[in-house]
Length: 117
Image (cartoon, rainbow, N blue to C red; front, side, top):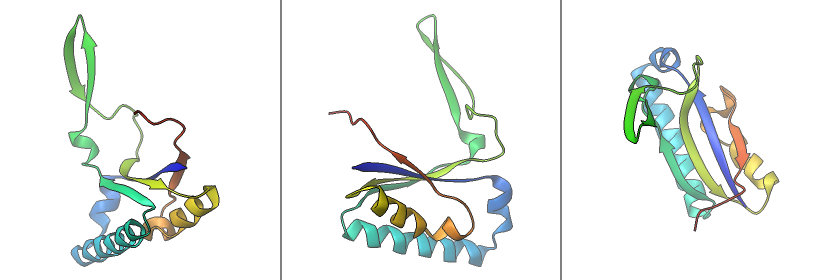
């Protein structure tokens, strides 16, 4: 079954990390990604841009209308997401708990119920 893992953050948290802290965090995340890509359970891992560069797109009178994002006005926003293909929820939970950020921030896990063909 497929699962979506999501991590959250904000500019304040990113700014609090030193250059060395970022380098270490990226190395830990790369090692996590490689470990689960090799098992075939990590389908993809994606880091998102800052909320300041997100955009909302609507269609008004048949034309695109673009405005600043994000859609939800919260302090935290999605920072990255990971697609997993695991045997079951217990395995997905174990992988989520192994995320490098899980010792500092919660990792959200959602089952994926439908997949476009």
